Length: 500
Image (cartoon, rainbow, N blue to C red; front, side):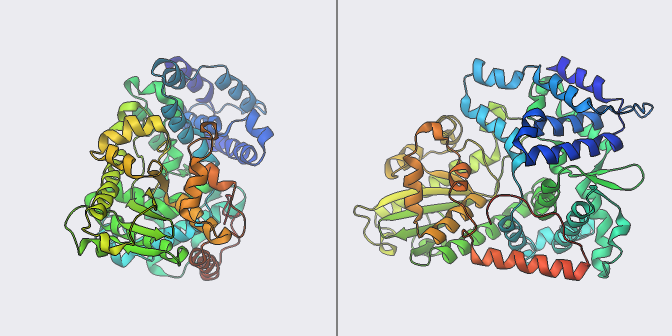
């Protein structure tokens, strides 16, 4: 893999990134729109080439970029073996880890940022800023911007970058912003959303040290965390618009978990739990809803966040405001990650809740279980690939759960791990089609293994324009209208992605 990586650097170090990146961005957009283009120019190879170019560029070179340079590069990528995938499939025979890695490498690039995603982020951060006081105070003191400023300026940056059609923006484009607090926050926010060519070079070098190089093609792109490239003349370049919008709307989560850590985790965990409860109540109006606080009035033992009693089932729901953040998709990194540990503890909380019902400690809050089926759902903030694959569950999650065998004996099917976007889709499908959570779990469980274990694919086949959560639609429409009016923004390229 080192030889492949060095060969790429040799091919790309002669090209000025300020000329090469626009070429990559243009082809990336075509590849994401057209399957025929994606076959010839795979999006994940294009983004990887952009990072290698920034990481290896030698300023004294100013080589002319030939028209067919990308075709030659793609041939080079395709003619080399993917050592990490070969090791995962052939040496350790872990297809679940292979799927985990491929999801992060390829599918993350193909996802858009939807209106529901926009509304959720507003509700979790700007609308909840008063419930994140230590986080907001830290951001204001250390960085010079508040939670509200981050999202407002971040969206304005996305709108300007995508609206120009050239992916390039300058700070002077925001001179129409009259709010002085927002104006002062502009530069520090641009700094946090961006990195220089030298900065990208350093991050790339650090991430490939020692034996990490075997995972070269599977380490998350630097542009996912820093979606803007800071050019030498003070301009900024956006390689991939959905990643810029994601950074603008969810970047507080990434800053919080890496810079504020404990305070942020405690505050945001409660906000996330409350948000999940709000959308459950909105969409499941006919169900009996039992929150954690109600159960805790009867016991000091561990319980889950919500129990939703349906006519023929009870669904136990535990929220974990986590995502997989390690750069490597190795077995060791995955099995020792905080996210997997939290999912394991969520299994224990669901199992404990069911035990308390059976022991009649909190049984009075529910109708007699009788023949009712029991289901478990763990809701995460970010997607955890392969979390529902049997091999992944057995080797990574269940060792983190002391009650995993007990939980399996209680439930009709293994507890399901969904990210919050998938839960929203599940609920919106239920609203649109009058289908219960239990029915959707049963339908998916009946599919053959070759259909896959990811909820995203299953739900996307059912989603249409009628699948909406009303409060999320209202919030995103309100924000889009107010933001464009307040800041004089031209229409940005559409917030892309399937569904609402």
